[in-house]
Image 1 (cartoon, rainbow, N blue to C red):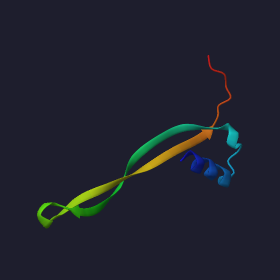
Image 2 (cartoon, helix red, strand yellow):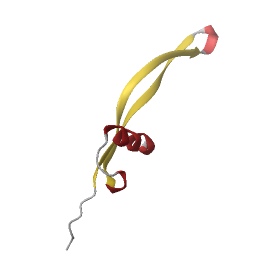
Image 3 (spheres, helix red, strand yellow):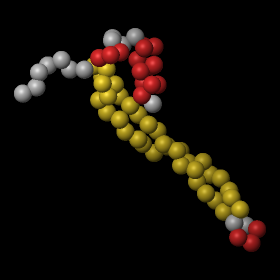
Image 4 (cartoon, rainbow, N blue to C red):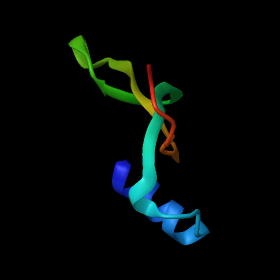
Length: 67
């Protein structure tokens, strides 16, 4: 995911790539694919294949000094 975020920053030409830092990263719920699998006595059992959305936000490094 980090390689993809860096490639997007290069594509959009957002300043110097070496000055970027991860400001936030989080995972949200995504869609669920409904699938069927074999169950007992010839029945079909439903199972959900859960997915997620991963978000990585890059921002320029702050150059100020901390106290």
